[in-house]
Length: 271
Image (cartoon, rainbow, N blue to C red; front, side, top):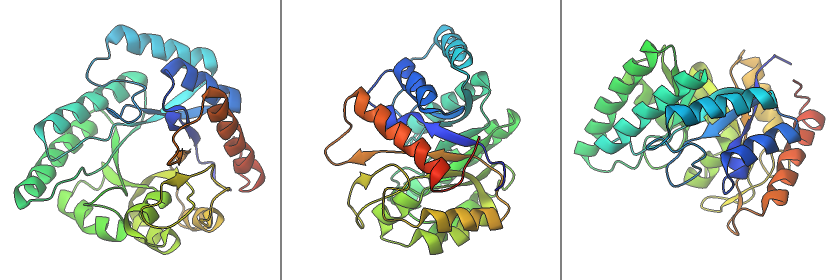
């Protein structure tokens, strides 16, 4: 098994403060993490208001817990000026925290003008990220890029192959498009830079994302494909529960620990 960095995403603790989320990931047994900075979704870092002092405090907290911050989720509506500026701040945050990848999604552009704005904004953000030694992971998520098959042309038009690639999320591929991720991931593999290891129960439009290994996706087949392709980037485990919402803290911690057990026992992932 290749030595991919295995991350715990703070999304499993989405309703809880960042200190509790980081403590929970460490308690579950993670050594690397992905932190949420998605406005209004899982806002463990608020990209609009976070101060240098708070980032310094978070760095100290991470070090005290023995957690290595690898990636940050900073999804914004990239067809808008506000979204471009916000992701720019997330890029700055990633640099301060010593991360290597900034994850986002396309946003919900619908008109030709919005699509053009998206491509212009992302190109500018790629150049900013490259200047800081960072990469951008464009997630399979939402209307513009629900699958890697569709996303190949989007990344080609952006034309920043050394900086932007796929953050592949198999659960989203089913949720948004009803596609088979075991087939669709083939389109992502040549440009895969981050892998959201997220399982799913139910078909298109069904919000149910249990601990990886407890759902219906053939996660082992996905791992076999990324390994065969020589993928050496991060594998970030996500749990988003179901349409009933997140449980209390103990329930979130139980899900995080269940995920770690599955990663070890079902998938042979070690760290």
